[in-house]
Amino acid sequence: MWGALVPHIAPKTYPVNGQFAKLLGEHYPGNGLNPRQEILVGGARIVDAVITHAVMSYEGSVRLLTFKGGQPLPCSSMVPAGTAFEATLRVLWILDPMASKNLLLARIAATQFEELYESRKLYR
Image (tube, rainbow, N blue to C red):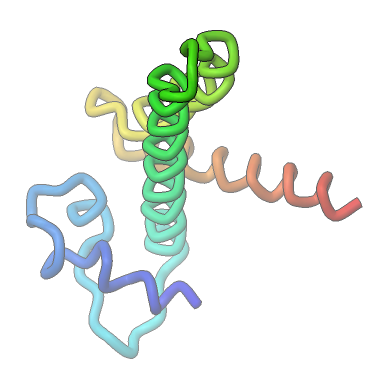
């Protein structure tokens, strides 16, 4: 499963100076990922998903604020705006350029654990 995501963050695909690419290191197709690389691949997936969620929430908020059928809906637009703001802060927290490599890995791992915990609550 993880191997399918590796080409998206491999140094040959992304710029060599990218934060994930530098941390991922060399990876050759057919080789398994080490635990550090698995965390980074999961982190790239999380960041992509959260950015997508934030953009969709911003778009929904703008649509409610520019409603053409009558008066704008300012109260309704605050719900997706708050969601978008929270998603944006999460991405900024994960990708903080001042964070050390170990802190970045810890933040990604904490986010993955949080996802698992929330998924478990939904399953029940």
